Image (tube, rainbow, N blue to C red):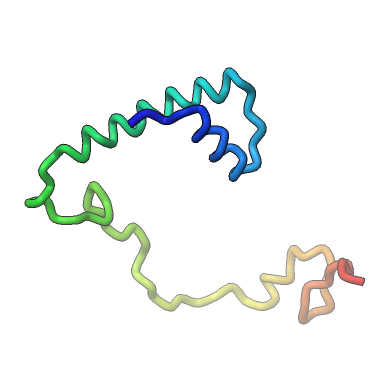
Length: 95
């Protein structure tokens, strides 16, 4: 499928891009090559291929969700630059 310079200009306007004449010609050729490759892929018989969500099987890499003892309140506040014994004190950023 051939992508015309007019189609590239139309898409560029939709994307609010300012393309030079050389870029319009360049992208017209590159997009045409991409669509030609997609046409080749469409010629393949995929009727016996089951749809996949990923090309390879993915195993969860997260650890088992097991409750563990958390850091103590005192240890959490120990390295804070400012605290009142209960909360972290931070400068006000909203007026």
